[in-house]
Image (cartoon, rainbow, N blue to C red; front, top):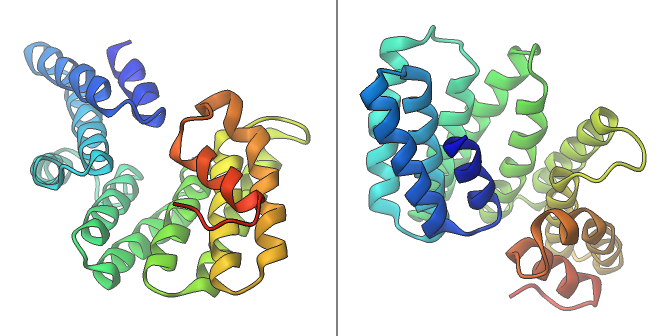
Length: 220
């Protein structure tokens, strides 16, 4: 329960609360000897700290969870895909765009090989789109965003609301802007809003960016 709440708070960008619940989850899991919950808490803490801008604790959490994964999991376990993507995002946040993108490529390759859990792949593609954009690869960013969107829309069904779809449209809009395709960027951003306002709220950074781009403004 605590881990799920921490994850929701992280996704809502309520990072201080997410970290607090993540730390409580980690402590409880350590007392209980729950290896899976420890790993999940560490990945969540790494993500929340990174998105908050606290890169040092994010890095420490990733070092700990990587050592645990290598000790506890088979080498092709899909959890390594989540780890590789989080490491890639951290590297990019530290200013190492190319190295971050290389780790993201590894994450996507692992998810493509492990087809039994396709939800990993579509989320990772949307994340890699952002890293491609940071690396100046607008075409690749657009391709990743579109592929992630297509996979998520096929999974949830026509007319369903999904924050992953919303985030995919935002990533696609950013890529189209970088390509100089402003009209397509506005359309993608407008399509994102119904998938973001309800699940994430008007104050979420993705919702604000979508609204700005839908109005022809560059996201702040």
